[in-house]
Image (cartoon, rainbow, N blue to C red):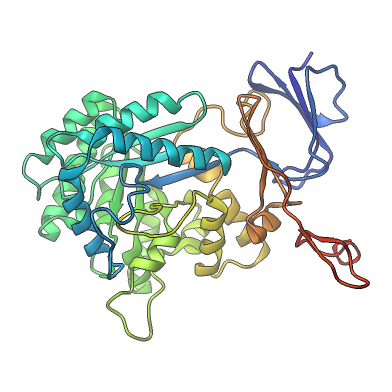
Amino acid sequence: MFDLILRRATLPDGRTGMDIGVREGRIAAVEKDLPGPAGEEIDATGRLVTPPFVDSHFHMDSTLSYGLPRVNRSGTLLEGIALWGELKPQLVQDAIVERALAYCDWAVARGLLAIRSHVDVCDPRLLAVESLLEVKRRVAPYLDLQLVAFPQDGILRAPGALELLKRALDMGVDVVGGIPHFERTMADGAASVRLLCEIAAERGLLVDMHCDESDDPLSRHVETLAYETQRLGMQGRVTGSHLTSMHSMDNYYVSKLIPLMVEADLGVIANPLINITLQGRHDTYPKRRGMTRVPELMGAGLTVALGHDCVMDPWYPLGSGDMLEVAHMGLHVGQMTGYDGMLACFRAVTEAPAKLLHLDGYGLEVGCHADLVVLQAADPVEAIRTRATRLLVLRRGAVVSRCAPVEARLSLPGRPETVSFTLPTAQAT
């Protein structure tokens, strides 16, 4: 007997009319016309059912702090960093925890059940670290929160940052982070990559570095990151986030760089909403897009994910935890409006980030956790186009969020009473 059968689902790979049987919090069967009985049955009515969304790059210690201590008037990266420096001494643990928990509520409602959050370790109090470890403990029943020890002010540039990072890892932070382009010199940036990768290798941890978040085509720390990954035998365990300098690099150098990244099996995370907002600020026209070379990196076989990065914080005044909005921006900025490109952008907020986070039991195969999202869409492309409503969100087979279908009611002579922004039936068939 199944605890739950989710019937008549359309899956991201295109299969239709599929039933998903759940037993003890895991997927026990995926097939058509699954025989019962079940403790509960839910009819997906042909709508898209997907594993949960995954945000592989976020800053939860600063989320929902927009306007504190003041608004970022210029909207630039550097003013955001300066604002965060002003805010850090004023932070209190209860406020960080409450803002983070509120954002996690948003995330669950959006079908976002796994987040990798960078947490600043350059505060001697390690207040944000303590706060997010508490949040991680409290949300564990319904959301996977993975923390990255992030030396926001530079591991070599900021006094005591190295010891603070090690303390954060000792406290239970999961991943080693870095920001080599923010060190004082290019040489220090390269040295920081080497140092941090060695720490991760010694401790058996993953690595995720803010890397080359710059318009400078000579910011090439990703090359060092790929080299150190291979030297230390950490292939598949290291990720470079942002990599925005690649959008300014010449094609000849990139033709050398991408194969190096492939040899290292380097993960890549672009953050389209933020990259396109913060980069290119020194340009008049032509103005650079700011996002790394997502189609080319995907085409080379690298695992590429799209992250949200920020929501209502010193760097970004918008956002609501919607990874479909991230995918929507990503496919536009990357000019990925071909069918395969759009599907790749959907995978970049589901399967790809789950792989980078090394999530256990993620997916729609038998034996995976029964973490599922029912979307008001017929397929992944429609889900991105409409930023589809999350009708149901399930965690370990239990419904944790519900939302009514969205439709507008019309009063137009000779026209339908409702509209739901899908193709007319005749055209759809």
